[in-house]
Image (cartoon, rainbow, N blue to C red; front, side, top):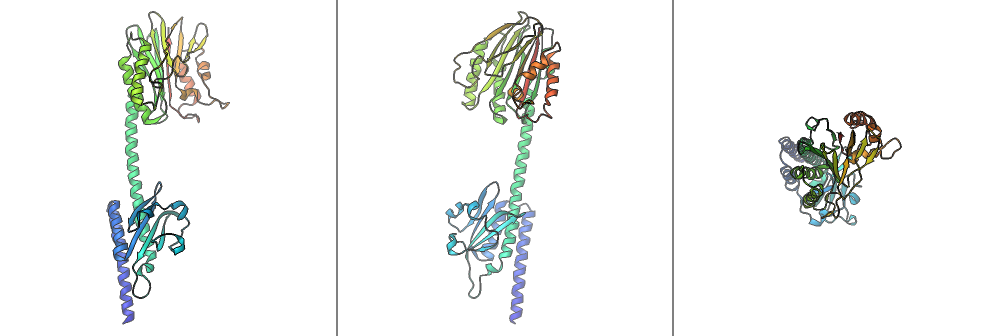
Amino acid sequence: MEDKKVSNDRVKILKFKLESLLDITLSINANLPTDVLLSKYESILREKLGIGKILIFKRSATWECLLNGGFPKQMEKIDIESRLLGFDDITYISADMDFEGVDIIVPVFNNSVHLAFLFIGDIEEEGEGMSPVLKHLNFIQTISSIIIVAIENIRLHKESLRQEAMKKELELAAKMQQMLIPDNTHMPKNPDIIVNGFYFPHYEVGGDYYDCVKLSETRTGFCIADVSGKGISAAILMSNFQASLRALLTSDIDLERLVHKLNSVVVSNAAGEKFITFFIARYDNKTKVLEYINAAHNPPVLYNDKSGDVVHIPASCVGIGMLDEIPVVKKTEVYIKGYTKIVCYTDGLSELKGDDGLDIGTKEIIKHISNHEPVKDNIQEMIKHLGIPDTNPYLFDDVSIIVADLR
């Protein structure tokens, strides 16, 4: 009779384990949420096995308390890295180990890496013999491993969906930002002025911007700008800046006044966290006067084909948004004598490294434009020579270039 009773008990235990594993597995396959899975798991341990306290720490990006059933809140603040990573086996806790209320620690692994730790406390004792929990520790470890891995897979799946959604948002943002950059086919192409541009954002979206606007029958405005920093915040600020510039730039607005107005817009929108370096020029092909302001931007390069002179246009005031009020803004006017090329660029180009390991600055620009060929062809050859965007190992920033042939 005793042997039969033992046999029946074993059958009941085996049936309980199989039913528990089946229930958990079906729940996982049914894509039930994390809180439901944890509720089922906790019910098995507390109600079926008589465990009074359960605490689970799970690793994701950092260690977190996944479930606390019965332990004091301060137990959730245990430093896992220093106190638990040495537990590689199921461990019975003694009083001198300083884990208050914990009887057993059960580690959970995934690919030989600690994925979680289960604390068990307040174990229900039998009248005779050892607690049933101690008989089923391997089962507890197995079902804990199944549930923790499932929850981690749920987290990874959600993270994957979130990243995919973000990727689509960035792709859409990139397309919208590309629409702000004028296409070369829509830039001025006449005997007096020919304008072309090149744009390569290092990320999906960037903080570089250039533009060209026909202001009147004789006047054309063009500019280039670069927001401090990169990514979405830079792109949003630049989009706002572009809208403001388009609204303010006219054939007769004083360029100093334009810069002051743009500064107020950026200060208001960026709250002092970002600024914009900015070069703005306006060319009158009737008077042959090029007027410009360089607000802390990289010095554009002027090349006169007749004389062979190369001029760098220095900064004439601080960047847009650096100060609440720009104290001094200086406009410069240049009379264009004969065929002249102008190249404006962002620091993604000038800070590329040369063979000597130093920034190339404007060396490549000067080398490539010092000839009689159109500046568009010069820049295309330079971009190819520098391996932009495919083969240059030093390309870590947005690269934008706007060039003009002036006559």
